[in-house]
Length: 215
Image (cartoon, rainbow, N blue to C red; front, side, top):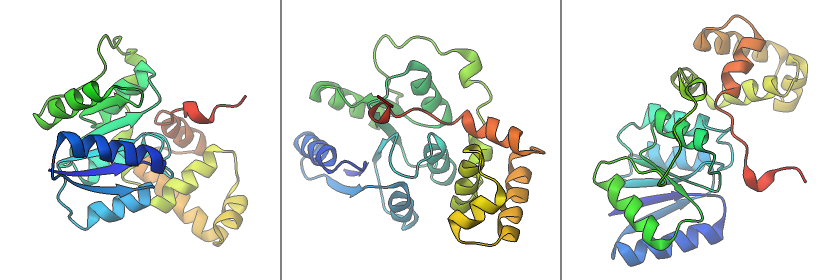
């Protein structure tokens, strides 16, 4: 068996590696700590039976990381592993392409059951998961967002923060013309005509990280 654990917390990766090693003796396990690392690894064509993906891995920008993986590597089964147990977030991940959602507080028994189910081709979510709110999960713009390049996603994220083109150009150390070109291409790919519409679409794939909430 071959697994990838994508999480920026070394202690969690170590714990999950130990759990997988006990259940799947002889398993090969790769570890990465950010979305760019993960995408680089997947682009090498590495064989993987299951990707265990932290929902809030650095540079994932909410659910956009999952959307990119589902679009570019549809053959890779993905199990989201997260401390965020919001039911609508869980349903969104499944709609976008995840094969399962495993809360980080799960017992070793639940981890084993979840992985077995996903490896057998089933979708696994926590028991007694409430039904989704239709307005939250219908018509998610995941496929359109996934067509954006990493730089275009950074630009879109900064637009969502209220930055103007000149400010974005300064932050990314590029020219205003480059940012204008990115914005034009973002609008085209998202099929929108202005910044507000683009931000609204982008916001539908954003989720709060429960570990980084303001006090």
